[in-house]
Amino acid sequence: MTDRSRKTIKDVARAAGVSIGTASRALNRTGRVSEATVIKVSKAAQQLGYQPDAIAQSLRLKSTKVIGMLVTDLSNPFFAGVIRAAEKRLQQAGYALLVGNTDNEKPRERFLIDLFQRRRVDGLIVGPCESEDAGMLADLDTGGLPVIGYDRDFGSDQSGLHVDHRRAAFEATRHLLNLGHTRIALLSSSSQLSPGRERIAGYEEALAERGIAPDPALIRAHKSSMEFVASEALSLMSMRPAPTAFLCLGTRMLAGTLQGLRQNGLRVPQDVSVLTVGDTDLARLYAPSISAVAWDLDLVGQMLAELMLRRLDGSETEPRRIMIPTQFIDRESCAAPGKT
Image: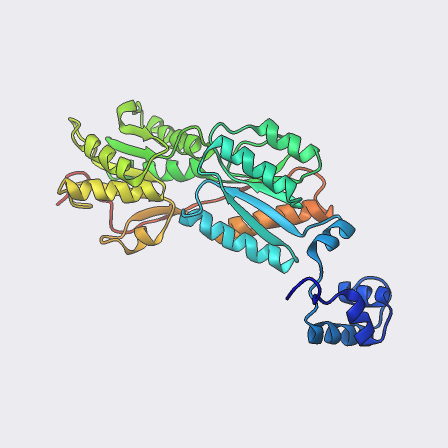
């Protein structure tokens, strides 16, 4: 359809036999207009194939009805689940979700924030990224762009959500300790990220509870690919004494660890125990199935959307912080050291 043939509100008003103002109020359901008129105008708009001009609407209403969201890795199933739930809730409220992938790179995050600002998004949900700057988010928020933090550092005057990653790693480590493991290798995403820092802290807390000093050689925290994690697993197994259990803090960490153990001819759990923080299809379907500490991804997405919607409608005037709890799922991948 060319611009010349594009139907306008004037065409809709003419077809419905009402004024342009009445047609506009009927389609937007604003002001005083009867239900019969709404039906008549809506029917005329549908028959003509009328589509509102989104740019004109956003200028008039001072709202694009679009929320931006930045995440580290769109291919990560944890982010995918959160995005899906957030998008569903926002759509129910009449908003669209625009998602950007930062690749955990600060310059790219800055570029995407600038891009979303130019696109005049109504609000921004910002996930973890390297070298997090709580001041930057606070400046955006006070500058008129509502910002909700997600699993990252944010200012005391801002609203946001965290998964209880520290507790998740603590419970996972404690489970392995209860089975008799004391040489527990930990593979995590970058310790610069809030989730990574919290998980390492939870791991160290559980060890300290048993009077065990953390061995820095057993902690591998990197912004890494699955292949790199596999080589790390092989490197860890070459240590003497070797770790008897692996705690994997992330999807790629688990996949790379399992690959490295398989290359080394090691069986789970007969030769080495494996436990993951964050439940995925890989953990559920791998044979043997992998024990995990999980959290409700749908709840995370819904609550992020709710925090944003409450900021936008003015019902949330004070900063609100939400902590999402985790739960342990015992499967088949953990056993006492040396058990055959």
